[in-house]
Image (cartoon, rainbow, N blue to C red):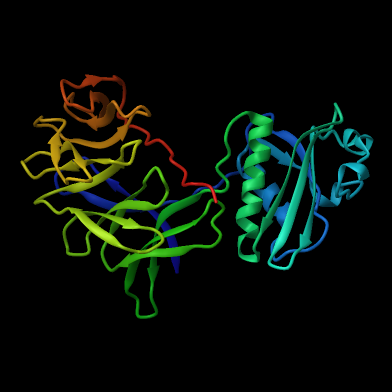
Amino acid sequence: MKRLFVVLLLWGWHLTATAGLTIEITEGAEGALPIAVVPFGGSAPEDVAAIIASDLKRSGRFKPLATADMLARPHSKAEVDFRDWRALKQESLVVGQVSATGSGYQIQFELFDVFRGEQLAGYQFTTSARDVRPTAHHIADLIYEALTGERGAFATRIAYITGMRSADGKERVALQVSDSDGFNPQTIFSSNEPVLSPAWSPDGRRLAYVSFENRKPAIYVQEVYSGQREKLADFPGINGAPAWSPDGRELAITLSKDGNPDIYIMDLASRGLRAITRHPAIDTEPAWAPDGRSLVFTSDRGGAPQIYRVSAAGGEPQRVTFEGSTTPALPIRPTASV
């Protein structure tokens, strides 16, 4: 049995628990844009059009037309009759062709505005059989950006923790990396003890995470491609919540080596530490501002968990939230596109 889980750091000195997580997307955003992604001509190891349509649908911003409802199957602009797609009330149309080459495949696509009858984008790629799926994700990114003005993240990858029960009933935890749609999972690290808080470096080549493999928490950084890993923080008490600086040169972490959990910044070149907070309360879950000049973090110094902001150089934190109990949302940093 295999399940996806998230580990939550509870408010208390020794309270750590794991909880099952089930995510179900039942509908897209209100007003999702109708788009037709016609099956591409030719053949390849992967269904390029199906991957593109699935990516766009998963974003919640688009509602792809079912293939069975299409009135025609054009593969190029010359074959497109926009009246067919206007009748189906489609706003955008994607057509394409896959051709085998001596060393792989050539994939080309065109994106059209149906009602204006204009081409919005069109590209051609040469790829290997192994990279057909990443290329399809990249095409979905180009389409998403052309229609929304925002960069897509379909050609990026996700890191997550899984728990598996072996035939002898023992639990084992794995840190895995997969495509954004969950395909091509690869195990980066596995252990009989908990693994928590995976965080991508800005260049998408390294992961920082917390491992309890020696029965106590320690922070590691691991190269995704080579598998080389290095222990960065193994101080007494809590070593947790690693967060990369935007330039990838520093990690903000939570340590309790001097008593209470506080926020520290580690310079990855020198391994030097500087304390950012010093308070009897619990300070944890740091997240960097996009410019790298400040951090937000969670603290219960006001009586309940709230978000505070502090300069990356240190100083007096400023309270940001004042109601309920809340924690900062870590910025999503997709890995480098393939």
